[in-house]
Every structure is written in C-alpha cells, then in structure tokens.
Length: 470
Ligand code: ATP
Ligand code: MG
Image (cartoon, rainbow, N blue to C red; front, side, top):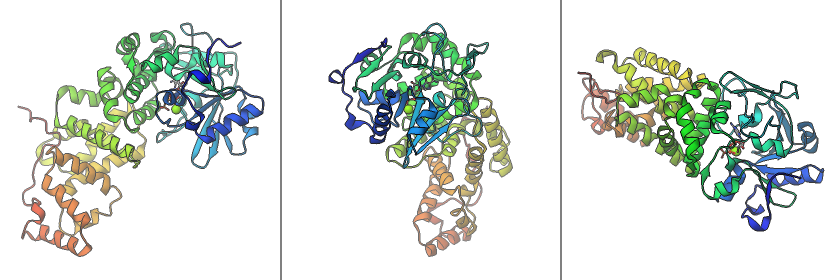
C-alpha cells in the first residue's frame, strides 16, 4: 500500500502522445514481465508544464540484471551503482532500479556520490545521481563525511524509499505505466503547478549531503522559471561555501548543464542572484567584482546569448568556447598585469591561459582538450588582429580558426578588438581563392588598405577594456 497520493489519469494532463515511444516500449516491456515501471524526474515535471523533456528516465523494481535480460539493446553502466541503458538508435532510455533511503526526509535521506572518474561528459551523459551509486548492498550502505556529504549510498529499495532521495519535489513525481496515474509523495504536483522549487526534507541537511543541489536549484529556477522556496534560497545563501567541497568533475558537468543547455543567460543571472558564482567560478566572480559593468561582462553575456540561440536552432555548442568566454576576464587581467609590449606575445598569452585554467581547476575540472582549445583560441587573437600577408590565409585552415574568429567578432563588438579587422576576416571567408590572395596582398603591400583593415604600428588595445591602473 503506497504512501503516495495517486492522481488518476482523468485528473492530470500527461498524455502518452507526448511520451517518447521508446520510453513507452521500455515501460510496457517491464510491465509485461511483471515489474513496476514509472517515468520519473525531469520528464514528468516537464510534461506537466508543457515542455518537451530532454530525456525520459525510467524507475523500476526490476534489478539491473533483470532489466538486461529483458532488452537485447541494453548495457549496464556505472561502476558502483548499476544502471541500465536501453538503446534505440540515438535515443537512450535510462532505467534505474529503485534505491533505498535510510530514513524519511529530515533524518538521513540519500543523495548521489562522486561521479565516475575521468573526463566529464559533454552534457546529456547519464546523470550522476543514477550513475554513481555503489553496486553492492553492504551493511555500511550510507556514509556521510564531516560536512554531511554523502560518500556511500548503495542499497536497492522500493518506490517508497526511492522518492526520499530525490532533490526537489518537482523532480520526485512518478508516472505509472500500470494505469497512467501520477504518484506524488511530496506535494510535487502542487509545486510544479505553482512553479515552485521546494527541496524534499530539511534544506540544510539536503544541501550538505550534496552541495551540487544548490547549482541544480539555480539551473531549474532559470530553465523552468520556477521560484525557489524562500527557506531553500536562504539555505543556499548560507551554505554556498560548501560548493568548495563538491567534486570538481561534477562541477564541470553541472557548469555545462547550466550554460550549454539553452538557458545560459538566465542561469548566469540565477547564479549571481543566489551568490553561487563565487562558489562555482571564484576567479570569474572576482573579476566582475573588481570591474563592475565591464566590457568583459557584456562580452560574456552576449556570448551566452549567442550560445543560447545556437542551442535553440539545434546547432552545436562547445565547452571550449564556453570556457573561453567564462575565463576571458581572468585571462585578460593576467595579460594586462604585464607591460603593454608583451600583450600580443604568444608566450604571455599562453601563460595567462594556463594560469586561468589552473585556478579554475581548483573548483571545476576542465578536461585538458578543452583548456588546450581555450589556449589556442586566445593565442590566435593577435594573429587574427595582425594578419601578415598571404600567411594569414593559412589561418583559415587552422582547426581552431572558427572558434577564434567567433571570439574576435565578439571582442570587436565591444571594441576590445578592431571592428575593421573583424570585418576583413568575415569578407575573407566569403571571398573566392583569387580574391583572398588579393586581399592578403593588399594588406601586406601597404597599398589600399583592405577593407579598412588597420596596419602599421600595432594597436595596443586593452584586452579587458578595464581602465588602466592610475
Ligand atoms: P533535466 O534532465 O531537465 O536537467 P532532471 O530533473 O531530469 O532535469 P537529472 O539530472 O536528469 O535532472 O536527474 C534525474 C532525476 O534524478 C531528478 O529529477 C531527480 O529526481 C534525481 N536527481 C538527480 N540528481 C540529483 C541529486 N543531486 N540529488 C537528488 N536527486 C537527484
Ligand atoms: Mg533528466
């Protein structure tokens, strides 16, 4: 006899026509085999407010091995806690076995563990909450560290247990395939309809268990336009410092979810409002604190706007470009701390990028391929700003040209680089090979200035556009 309020199909708006056919296939197969099958989490929440879910997660009482036997196209993942991925072309339905919480909320509910080691996913990887639990049913199933953070959490349970380990009431609704009802243990339905983000249990305890929940709150508030419940907001402000104890690989994943999922601008605003930028990206926050209303901040916001627009248009977005935007302030600051005659020197720029990446890594683990990309983007800036004859044409073939050019365009928009030279590169890309040669020669020959591109003495534009120190 479940403890949930069961809302029958006639009293809610979720229709099977909005559910992924593959998720339905998984649910029906589980049901035919005598198991429980529920959609759970973000997909139920999103369907209730009329959004298209990013993915469909399934929860069941079948054990991972039992799930595997039911599906040919299935792989078990997660080193510590087994989780089934059922593949349909490029759609993956994640099937998680119910997990046990040690106690109802307020006592000692459960959260996730550190993520898998190694490089972070590029977004839309299995969520850590599901992927990271231990795979044994040990006696010391639930272990907290000295801050109250959950270190081990590894027992299977029933749906009555599973619900208490979820983070927010809006994320804790279950849609049953048996009769299409919604099971609500925590008042989540009411909260979703009121667009309210309420934590399950005591805010302080739940944020201590897993400080990443603070970022999740910021992200959901931004993406869903939900209001964060005042006690949760107060707890976030009070305990934001705990982010420092979160595993850097998870903070990287979460940063991508915040900024590369189409709501970067509102996520940024939400982080700042909640005082979380300081905890997630301390060097970035420090730059903005020292240079209020700076051009760099405007550049970041415009870059995030462009990224959001790309996501909306179904275009690709990259962590490299995102981190170039985020680290622009710290990198510019390190460069400008040097004498102006070094500002365009490759060595100085690379050192500044390395310093910024190293400082970042104290909090956010940026995989090396992305920090190398950021370096290349910045190192290409002076080469784009001072194209040298036909050699400049070779830059068009550089693997990082496009990203570096996009950064140049943004810089030019805020007069952090010459707008004329940005126009020159735009024209160059659209030109025929012959015209390209002519444009390069004009630039080198010192005749008519190509498209108004500046030549002659190097311009010493301040990268950050901050006022020179007195
Ligand atoms: P979206 O996929 O739209 O970002 P989501 O709510 O589905 O949002 P996921 O990260 O996919 O978020 O997680 C799926 C579900 O797992 C959540 O809805 C929540 O119930 C649970 N969950 C995920 N992470 C945590 C966590 N850190 N603590 C507690 N529960 C979590
Ligand atoms: Mg999800």
